[in-house]
Every structure is written in structure tokens, then in C-alpha cells.
Length: 398
Image (cartoon, rainbow, N blue to C red; front, side, top):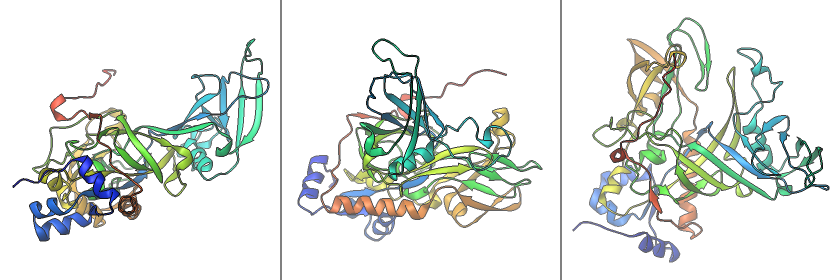
């Protein structure tokens, strides 16, 4: 008899402290030992996690009104520009924004920069942040300049809103040219001197729900150490039909737009990132629970690193020329071994994301659920999947 459960039934078990919760790492051995059917009957929730640089991140901030009031036109936080074309005292600071005088804007390869992601980390850490703002002045908002120091407690409102996080899969960056290059995938040494990747593999949220059967708009998640939600599918969300037999996409595929109260979050799970010669970013901790509604969903959560393949991309040609630059596929088991073989050459690998932190996130989310501190939400709308035939539009510019 097929196993079927509902969100309501699982949440009731959470309330009573009877829900069986395991991580996406633990379910692999459990299902191998007991089989898919028995595991699906036994387990109620599988928790996932990922922690790494997610450039398409930022925060909406409301500063409150000064005396006299002002309509902030230009805003800087610790010298980093925030976009203020929203309302009188609202601004959005992006994780990759840099100060105008940052060395990375002037010299390549430059230095390790301080940017928007670091401002967000400083705010979450409770550190004082220098606020500078100017305005043109109006009858209702006469003030033209303000310089002060704030902390996150001084803000009326602080919302982490990340337009594109938790890529389902991603490239392995490599460099076949004869010079070092500086990229968002880190420093890539010449002549395939190294290969960088950025994913938690078998723990990654969308790898455990490859067709978005349970993750959708309104899904409650672990975000930055607090509770957040899936707000929409992320920018560049492009479900792919190119998948393995287990449904795993062999390219970027899905992404998520995420949001949550910044004041709940922790610097342990939101870290400013400096990428040498490239710029700044924000490392974000994301954990998503997968409700085991049936055997099919359980089967997807048993995905292993050896089942997940990522494309190896030459960043010395692919990105400048917008060419595919694909050098084949490698499994996450190979990547995590520390060495892959490309064009008959052994290449050392390194991860920009932390599997250790991803495990901590999955374990933390598991603990929250077991203690009745976190309940599941049923999506109000599913994410676009392969059936919708979503494809990215690209500018045809030469």
C-alpha cells in the first residue's frame, strides 16, 4: 500500500513531539537499510542545508525619520552605497556593492574588498555602522544631510531579501589559459592549476526536491540563523530537462528568492565574503525541510554525491565570450575527493561552500522541528518546473 501523508498530519506529530526527522545525509543509509517504502512510512521530515557565497543577496532597511524629516536620496553605510529610490527613509543594500574608493574598483587583481555583504554581517553582529545620507530637500522633507552611527536595533525594519539563492547545481570553475584569473568562483590558476566548486551536493535543498514537489512559494525555511520563507522562484530560475536518471539536473537549473527578518539572524550564518580581484559577496546559510508525503519524495532525498554531476567550465573563455566552455561533467563524490581528471590531467579541487556548515544547518533545523519550534508550511504556489518550459532570455549583443 502506497504511503501518503499530509502537511497537517506531519505538523500534528511535530506538536506532539512524535515526528521522525533525519537529515539528508542520514536518510541515505536509512533508506539503504530499510528500503524506500519502510523509510517513507517511518520518516516524516528530511532536513537539508547549504552555506556558501550567494551574490544575489541584500537587505531592505528602514531608518526611521530624523528631525526635521528628510527624503533620503543617496545613502552610504560604512562607505558602501545603498539604493534609496524607494521611499523617504527606505534603502536596499546589495551584497556585492563596493565603496567607490575600493581598490578592487581601480586595480586588477586588486585587494580583498569590504562591501555590502560585510555591512550586512556588521549589522547582524550588532556593530555600529556609519550612516551618511544626502537629499535635495522638499517642503515636506526639508533636511538635506545627515551623518550618524546606527546599529540594527536603531532600524525600524530590516528584511533580508535575496533575489537568487540556493542554486540547484552549479559550475566547476577551471582555467585553461596561461595566466591567473580572478572570478566569482575564486582565484583560478593557469593551465588547470585548480578547480573550484560551490555546492553542498547531497545536502543541498533543491537536490533533494529536484522537481520542486514540496519547495514552493511560502515554504518556511532556516535562513541566516533565523526563520525565513521562499518568496518566489529566484532570478535566472531555469529548470532543465538535462537530468540524470535520478532527476538531478546537470546544470544550474532552479534558484530561490528568499526573505526573512534580519533582526532574528546571526553572523554565524551571514558572513561578508571578499573575493580577491573580483569583489564582495555574502555567505548565506539556508536550510529547507522536505516533508515526506509519499515514497517518491522520499526516494528523491536519498540522492548521493556520486549521483550528482556538475559541468566543468573554462572561465578563461566561457565568461568573457559568453560561450559554453563545457569540459565535461564530474560527480560531487569526485570533487569532494580533492582531485578530478580533466583532459588527462589530475586537477586539485576546492569548495567555496562549506559542507561542515551545511551539516550544522541541517542538524539545527532537525533539532528545531523535534523540539516543536518549527512547523512546516504548504506552498501557496509551486515553483515553475520543467513542465512550464522556462528558459532564460539572453541579450543578442556582439
